Length: 169
Image 1 (cartoon, rainbow, N blue to C red):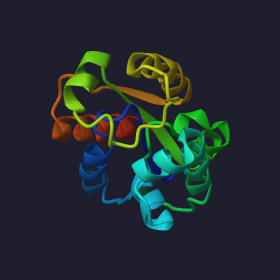
Image 2 (cartoon, rainbow, N blue to C red):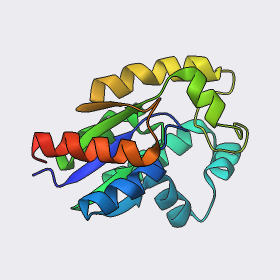
Image 3 (cartoon, helix red, strand yellow):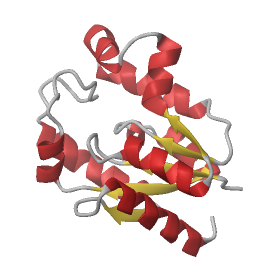
Protein backbone atom coordinates (compact mmCIF):
# COMPACT_ATOMS: atom_id res chain seq x y z
CA UNK A 1 0.00 0.00 0.00
CA UNK A 2 1.21 3.48 -0.83
CA UNK A 3 1.62 5.32 2.45
CA UNK A 4 4.22 7.88 1.30
CA UNK A 5 4.45 10.84 -1.05
CA UNK A 6 7.54 11.31 -3.24
CA UNK A 7 8.42 14.68 -4.75
CA UNK A 8 10.40 14.76 -8.00
CA UNK A 9 11.62 17.66 -10.10
CA UNK A 10 14.59 19.77 -11.05
CA UNK A 11 17.00 21.30 -8.55
CA UNK A 12 15.41 24.59 -7.56
CA UNK A 13 11.84 23.29 -7.92
CA UNK A 14 11.44 23.46 -4.13
CA UNK A 15 11.16 19.75 -3.33
CA UNK A 16 12.92 19.95 0.04
CA UNK A 17 11.18 23.06 1.33
CA UNK A 18 7.75 22.10 0.00
CA UNK A 19 8.33 18.58 1.33
CA UNK A 20 8.81 19.82 4.89
CA UNK A 21 5.67 21.97 4.69
CA UNK A 22 3.69 19.11 3.12
CA UNK A 23 4.89 16.67 5.78
CA UNK A 24 3.56 18.99 8.49
CA UNK A 25 0.28 19.39 6.62
CA UNK A 26 -0.17 15.60 6.30
CA UNK A 27 1.26 14.80 9.76
CA UNK A 28 3.98 12.75 8.04
CA UNK A 29 7.71 12.52 8.54
CA UNK A 30 10.16 13.94 6.02
CA UNK A 31 13.05 12.27 4.19
CA UNK A 32 15.44 14.11 1.85
CA UNK A 33 17.43 11.58 -0.18
CA UNK A 34 20.21 14.11 -0.87
CA UNK A 35 20.67 14.53 2.89
CA UNK A 36 20.60 10.74 3.35
CA UNK A 37 23.43 10.42 0.83
CA UNK A 38 25.49 13.08 2.60
CA UNK A 39 24.91 11.52 6.05
CA UNK A 40 25.58 7.95 4.95
CA UNK A 41 28.60 8.81 2.79
CA UNK A 42 29.96 11.59 5.06
CA UNK A 43 30.56 13.69 1.94
CA UNK A 44 28.72 16.46 0.13
CA UNK A 45 27.07 15.71 -3.20
CA UNK A 46 29.56 18.05 -4.86
CA UNK A 47 32.49 16.16 -3.28
CA UNK A 48 31.14 12.90 -4.70
CA UNK A 49 30.70 14.51 -8.12
CA UNK A 50 34.18 16.03 -8.11
CA UNK A 51 35.96 12.88 -6.93
CA UNK A 52 33.89 10.09 -8.49
CA UNK A 53 31.77 11.61 -11.26
CA UNK A 54 28.09 12.02 -11.97
CA UNK A 55 27.42 8.36 -12.74
CA UNK A 56 28.71 7.35 -9.32
CA UNK A 57 26.48 9.93 -7.66
CA UNK A 58 23.51 8.53 -9.56
CA UNK A 59 24.48 4.98 -8.50
CA UNK A 60 24.70 6.03 -4.84
CA UNK A 61 21.36 7.82 -5.14
CA UNK A 62 19.74 4.68 -6.53
CA UNK A 63 21.21 2.61 -3.70
CA UNK A 64 19.87 4.98 -1.03
CA UNK A 65 16.40 5.06 -2.59
CA UNK A 66 16.23 1.28 -2.89
CA UNK A 67 17.04 1.02 0.84
CA UNK A 68 14.05 3.19 1.80
CA UNK A 69 11.59 1.19 3.85
CA UNK A 70 9.34 3.87 5.31
CA UNK A 71 5.69 4.74 5.75
CA UNK A 72 3.84 8.02 6.26
CA UNK A 73 6.77 10.03 4.91
CA UNK A 74 7.17 12.78 2.37
CA UNK A 75 10.27 11.87 0.35
CA UNK A 76 12.16 14.63 -1.48
CA UNK A 77 14.43 13.08 -4.09
CA UNK A 78 17.49 14.44 -5.80
CA UNK A 79 16.77 15.77 -9.27
CA UNK A 80 18.53 12.83 -10.89
CA UNK A 81 16.55 10.07 -9.14
CA UNK A 82 14.48 9.59 -12.31
CA UNK A 83 17.50 8.20 -14.18
CA UNK A 84 17.13 4.97 -12.20
CA UNK A 85 14.20 2.89 -13.36
CA UNK A 86 14.76 0.56 -10.37
CA UNK A 87 14.58 3.45 -7.91
CA UNK A 88 11.45 4.86 -9.54
CA UNK A 89 9.70 1.46 -9.55
CA UNK A 90 10.48 1.18 -5.83
CA UNK A 91 9.23 4.70 -5.11
CA UNK A 92 6.07 4.10 -7.14
CA UNK A 93 5.40 0.92 -5.15
CA UNK A 94 5.61 2.71 -1.78
CA UNK A 95 4.40 6.23 -2.64
CA UNK A 96 2.43 8.55 -4.85
CA UNK A 97 4.90 10.37 -7.11
CA UNK A 98 4.34 14.11 -7.45
CA UNK A 99 6.23 16.12 -10.09
CA UNK A 100 6.74 19.78 -9.19
CA UNK A 101 7.01 21.24 -12.67
CA UNK A 102 8.88 24.53 -13.01
CA UNK A 103 9.82 26.25 -16.27
CA UNK A 104 13.48 26.41 -17.28
CA UNK A 105 13.83 30.19 -16.92
CA UNK A 106 12.33 30.08 -13.42
CA UNK A 107 14.74 27.30 -12.36
CA UNK A 108 17.64 29.41 -13.64
CA UNK A 109 16.35 32.40 -11.70
CA UNK A 110 16.22 30.35 -8.48
CA UNK A 111 19.59 28.57 -8.72
CA UNK A 112 22.72 30.64 -8.22
CA UNK A 113 25.20 27.96 -7.17
CA UNK A 114 25.35 25.65 -10.22
CA UNK A 115 29.04 24.87 -9.67
CA UNK A 116 28.69 23.79 -6.04
CA UNK A 117 25.13 22.45 -5.82
CA UNK A 118 25.97 18.85 -6.69
CA UNK A 119 23.90 18.60 -9.88
CA UNK A 120 24.56 15.22 -11.52
CA UNK A 121 25.09 15.84 -15.22
CA UNK A 122 27.61 14.89 -17.88
CA UNK A 123 30.67 17.19 -17.92
CA UNK A 124 29.87 18.85 -21.27
CA UNK A 125 26.07 18.83 -20.91
CA UNK A 126 24.37 22.22 -20.79
CA UNK A 127 21.86 22.90 -18.05
CA UNK A 128 19.14 23.38 -20.68
CA UNK A 129 19.92 19.97 -22.24
CA UNK A 130 19.81 18.42 -18.77
CA UNK A 131 16.46 20.11 -18.07
CA UNK A 132 14.93 18.88 -21.32
CA UNK A 133 16.29 15.35 -20.83
CA UNK A 134 14.90 15.13 -17.29
CA UNK A 135 11.53 16.70 -18.14
CA UNK A 136 10.64 13.63 -20.21
CA UNK A 137 11.51 11.34 -17.28
CA UNK A 138 9.69 13.42 -14.66
CA UNK A 139 6.55 13.36 -16.77
CA UNK A 140 6.89 9.62 -17.36
CA UNK A 141 6.99 8.75 -13.67
CA UNK A 142 4.64 11.40 -12.27
CA UNK A 143 1.28 10.29 -10.96
CA UNK A 144 0.41 13.87 -10.13
CA UNK A 145 1.82 17.02 -11.77
CA UNK A 146 1.82 20.36 -9.98
CA UNK A 147 2.66 23.70 -11.60
CA UNK A 148 5.41 25.12 -9.40
CA UNK A 149 5.89 28.40 -11.26
CA UNK A 150 3.46 30.84 -9.63
CA UNK A 151 2.41 29.67 -6.18
CA UNK A 152 4.41 30.15 -2.99
CA UNK A 153 5.93 27.09 -1.35
CA UNK A 154 3.18 27.10 1.30
CA UNK A 155 0.50 27.33 -1.39
CA UNK A 156 2.12 24.51 -3.36
CA UNK A 157 2.23 22.23 -0.32
CA UNK A 158 -1.47 22.90 0.32
CA UNK A 159 -2.29 22.29 -3.35
CA UNK A 160 -0.44 18.95 -3.27
CA UNK A 161 -2.20 17.93 -0.03
CA UNK A 162 -5.55 18.82 -1.57
CA UNK A 163 -4.82 16.89 -4.78
CA UNK A 164 -3.65 13.88 -2.75
CA UNK A 165 -6.80 14.05 -0.65
CA UNK A 166 -8.85 13.91 -3.81
CA UNK A 167 -6.91 10.77 -4.78
CA UNK A 168 -7.43 9.23 -1.30
CA UNK A 169 -3.74 8.53 -0.65
